[in-house]
Image (tube, rainbow, N blue to C red):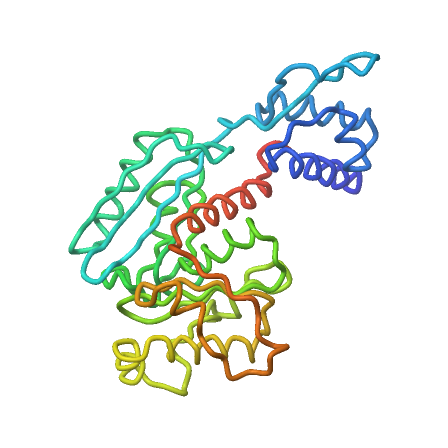
Length: 325
């Protein structure tokens, strides 16, 4: 009996995976895609309709036979709360937004502060939840090092050494995901570009460079979520980095790019800088063998990729939800 139950759950997961890609599906298409019998698909569709995870949206155009019924994810089955923390010099920015399962905005707000406190973050999230009662997952992008929800270092100094995931889980009773901002943007880039080996380097005007690594289509965090923390490379201390950021930002970026090339050998490196313009970044002269220099793609900002990354993270968490079994 246990094996039969496991197979049923596995089949439901296959069908859920199809719907979370936000496509429109018919029973025959789902059967062909998943390898599940049409009878099995009919039973799973009944379960998902009863749970309101999917919606019947009409009939497909007839090709001469009986019209097929069409189904799609119910975009309001639940909503996603996105929280993006950004720091520009002495200004702290907290952006909150809720979206449906099609990534369409429901509510958004932001706070610009000179403090960047825990209490300000709590108040912004509470306001977000007050304005959208369908949110069941909160995804946070933070400019710092996060290990399983614990913030060991952060550009928001007042959030350092706080276990945000534990505190927010107890406070809000929602699913909580917290990730480094450059990692989030790297996930967003991968979602849009589908390049298997990708690195994203972000050079801020203050503090130190961040790097997100995608290896074989997966974010690489390392065993303690420390992967990509180029600021701690032993070749140059903080004093040297500060001086180079002021006087030789292009040379500093070149050294950091070449370090990544030697360690993980990505197919593409995407660059975003608050210090250098596009021309400065696209004309860096590398001291590497030509065949090992990756494609260089320069970004105007990380905003779009942060948004896409948080959505992709939330959808993947939602796919694993077992509330329909």
